[in-house]
Every structure is written in C-alpha cells, then in structure tokens.
Image (cartoon, rainbow, N blue to C red):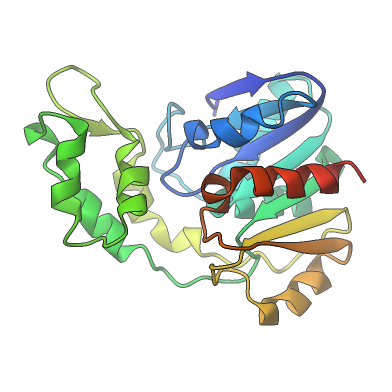
Length: 253
C-alpha cells in the first residue's frame, strides 16, 4: 500500500508513526522541532489521514506498509518513532526487520496486550450525524455524552473533512478500525530486539507502568525509559518541547 507522507528537513531520516485515529498532521509541531537536524518523515497509516483505506488493519500489514514506503524512498534504514498504535508498529518493525532500524523510539505504549478500551470513542464517533453537520465544531455536542475529555474530542474532530462539500466524513476508516479493534491491543512479545531503544511515557499515563519495565527490558535489553512529567498519553502534543528534547538526547548519544 502506498502511504501518504510528508517530509520536513534534511539529515538522518526519522520515520514517525501516529496513533489510532490520528494522522501525520498531529506530528507536525514535534516534526518542526526536529527538522533542523533530521529528515523527518511523517506518515499516515493505512485507514488514516490521506492514506488508502482497506478492510485489513493489522500490525503485520502496517509494518509492511512502512517497509514499502522506506523502499520507495531508498532508505536502507532510519530511526523509527511511533506513538501508541504507531509505537506497536515500530516495535514489530524493529523485531522483524532489525537491520532497517537505526534507533527505536516508542511513545507511551509497550509490547504487552492491552484490552480493548475504545468503546466510548467508537460510540462517540458513531453518534455524530455526518450528513447533518453545518460545521466541524457541531460534532462536539454529539460526542460529549460519551467522552468527558475536551482534548480527546478536539483530537478526533481534527479528522473531520468535507470530501464533497455536501457532508462531512472522517479521514480514518471507521468501519475497518471498528471491525479490527481487537488487533490494536495485540501483544508483541514473541521476538526481542537488541538495538538501542527508548521508551517514553507520560507521567500521568498508565500505559507503561513501573511493573511493566522489567518485561520490556527482557525483550529490549538495550532500552532506556524516559518519563515526561505532567503529560498524559498524548505526551508529544501536551509537552512537545520536552518530548522532542528526550528524543534528540537519545539520538545524539
């Protein structure tokens, strides 16, 4: 699958993979903070952003999509950075294609199994009457009964667009994501990766706990853990400068 992507800057390439229901636009601010020293390649995953849609939505397919993109850009290897779902794509890519990864950065996700916990998000998205919206912000009222956090609602609404000037649509493929939602929490703990790795967690997030770290270190023996104080799961959006500083410190050593 030929993924949509955007390149910022020049230098050593770093491929950035967004999370579930996100898109490359979510990473432009951190990307701008890195473009002075790196060739930042922001990627829309399949079924997200401006990349093609498919009934298939699995980590295996997403990894091969990224490899295809790297091949098309003549990249033998690159730093790979992924957040949440994109973090698991990065993990699996490093496990299966270690020679294609220079350094691995995983943002607020681990290789363990995560139970499905997106029911409220899916219900909120389904509640939005796309054909009736006059403007993008009208969607929020329909989402409030399902989602308490304004930041999550704003994040999702960024994916609303006008494909035909008559009605709104989601940039992500909601049908495929919902049908394959069990795959998103899949454990990726059968293969190890001995390359240099950085796991970055939000101090207010519970996606990577202290008790998770020994298991992560077993699979990633040359890994380091950084914590961004005051940040939750969307640590790159909440604390972009602190997040990028941690990434750059790791890549420069």
